[in-house]
Image (cartoon, rainbow, N blue to C red; front, side, top):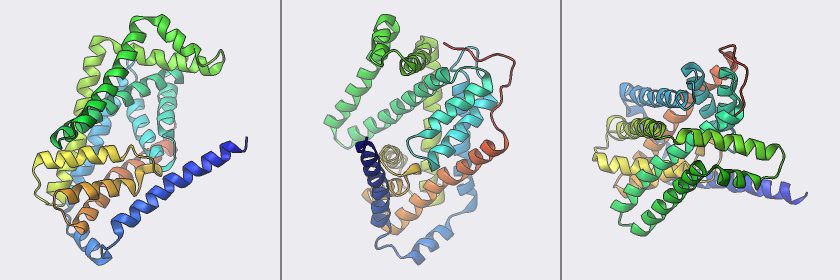
Length: 319
């Protein structure tokens, strides 16, 4: 019993220690006066445009979620759930926002949280696929063919397992049996069923198109930040590479919101393309805050002022 707290404390120290170290790395040698001068030169309209593009992406995320169930979920509930989930992920550890998103959608539509959790898992799986494709493109252009092959192998393995589970339900049952006979097994079984329900050809095409659109908006956010806000004049393919690297940086273990780690990854990528440390740090700070502050405020206000309520008379349904 004593080992669990020690491991938990070690994990917390590692994550927050990484954030502190990364903040020290990016701020070291950059005069604060120069940083504030650069940030003060950023034009307001392009800055607002970056925020608007990010909220357009969130709206498409809500639309994607709404059509991942049959019958479709309320767009109002899925959009609010998206903002609330992102806000919670920014302030709480362990991706607690994903659980909150599933619970919010379940209450707002009268369906089980296990089913909506399966939908959220499938949503995240598609986002990881798109991010992996961006990373694959970046690694390929950088000549890292071995790492690119590992990415392809991992993606292929994940899709093969899910396809086998859908084609042979008995395999899925055997997998869930590994979790015993209690509530955990029932939870995993229902969540997995929510994933497999979205494995039909039509649903996969819809999810692929929606996910690619969302990540096009995310990449546009970075391109606008690089060339409209910071006015660095980088070619679109270099800006896209910087976006791919920054997306990978958000996956590294760190404090909630990837504070420090995101800045370190983005500054390193910008330096690789000849951007000075002061300009790179200014852009990294703006880019992160444009993703962090507006959605955290919006999600927090929704969470406080508009608690999830069932929007119909349906009783919660189990899978």
